Image 1 (cartoon, rainbow over the protein chains, first blue to last red):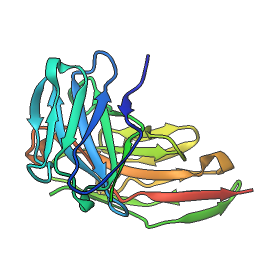
Image 2 (image 1 turned 45 degrees about the vertical axis):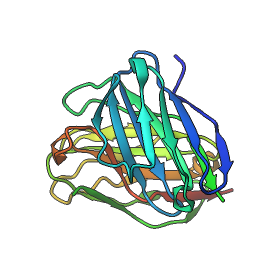
Image 3 (image 1 turned 180 degrees about the vertical axis):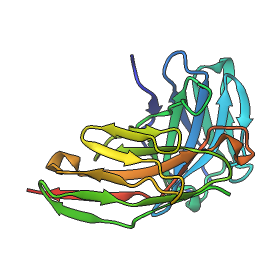
Length: 116
Length: 116
């Protein structure tokens, strides 16, 4: 089965511009997560979708970030306007949502965002 | 809140050396514990996991045991190979952290370099 895919793999933009990242989860995975790793820091959770609904968006840093998952398939993460501190690697992960701690998240290769 | 602490890198070992990467955690409930690996130029891959105390996860010669009494999940391998060179991340998911989500909390990652 195809894995989680992310597009683009690398994006370089100027401060104040808008960027949209895309994630295609593994087919049949209802759960979709976004994470971010800023240089030298831990990978941090941003938000979690179950199908098209936002289950948990407690990790979103501010209102410049907007995530959508229309139709419960692929997801987009828009940053508008981008700031220097938004630079980092954005990971997407998907899972089946198994109960009892058995759930496993499968990660995409990430999108490296550089804001100049 | 939940947190994961893992040993700082980088770690450089000779081929066939013994590897230990320490990982300790704090969690509200009864988390599941994971080790993810990121090979150069690739995304995160699940290496192994354990869902309850005293469970041992294993894969590709790597092992880690869920120690509730010491809140630890140290990664070990008896004989490393050059192909094991990668960044290793310890992580937990804790449904009872209050967010109602299986979001992963990560350590900072440990870069391992194995030299011939």
